[in-house]
Image (cartoon, rainbow over all chains, first blue to last red; front, side, top):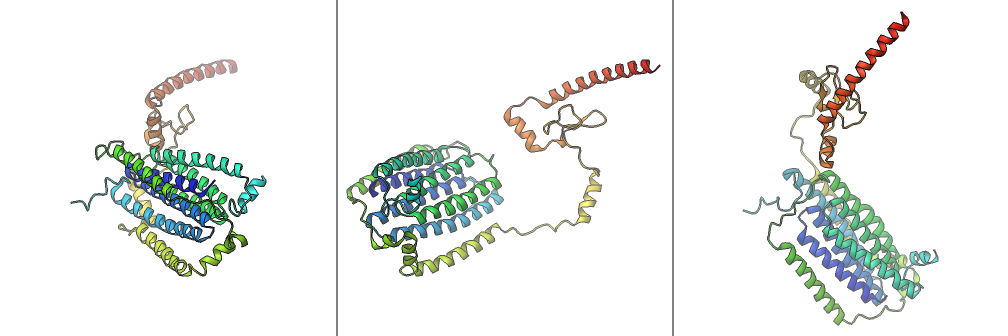
Length: 99
Length: 283
């Protein structure tokens, strides 16, 4: 397949992830949707890397993976702290800064 | 099988994947990934979402392999599916699987507008990417010629060496942050063995609780124990098990217990009759 097909697939997966972030209310699932978006970006990077015939895209995808891993660790720790305080993982319940 | 080896050795561009094989594999994986991604955002149970995400990630890993990125394919499986997703599952288990999100929309029409927005994003990006006239795959370059892993290592430790070093700071910060956030100060003094023993004596229940089901006729964990005085001890059934029975709509336990008691009476009379008969035999 040409790299374009992979880029189109990445676009679709990215949009699905974005919709997931918007419609889900459980913070864990929002995180998962963000991971899906990051994965879609990686797919696009790899496709571009193949298109240009160099490895820079793959290196960037590799860095994205590292950053995603760090982000998940901190994000889930925050989630645990919020859950401890509110006994709920719903993003609607964490509204103490609202007023 | 040979295809798998070719795949593992560096997919498309460094690769001699059969074009037809390449195309068929792409369509299978693309449909699988999109369906799993849709299921992920629509399914209600958090654990099912995590499994769907695993399907997406694994199909993307195979796609990386098809595109001449075998190293990334393995990193994807090991780091994403192996570590990140397990972390997700861990947190889901900690927070509680039964913690379902309510289906009530807090902002009216949020889902509809989110869906429309997502659709608009897809159209916008596809039109944009389509106009960008993406070329076909470039012929294999020197970087790919040597070896995917060697090429990547050369890039990471020359051009990208500074970002690579920054990454270490990021990882240390993340590890420290996770420790700080997950840490909980002890607000009550730690219970010593003496305190535990005191509390036990004070509670009046010194002996262990009766285990469930043992004295009842059903030998099951969801049956309360029957105490020597004929009453049942509801405490002997784990709350989780009792809740599960309620969730599954199993029959009322009290009815079963009554039936048990009747059965026991019957058995008791039979025993007495037998004993009487045995007594007659001996005489």
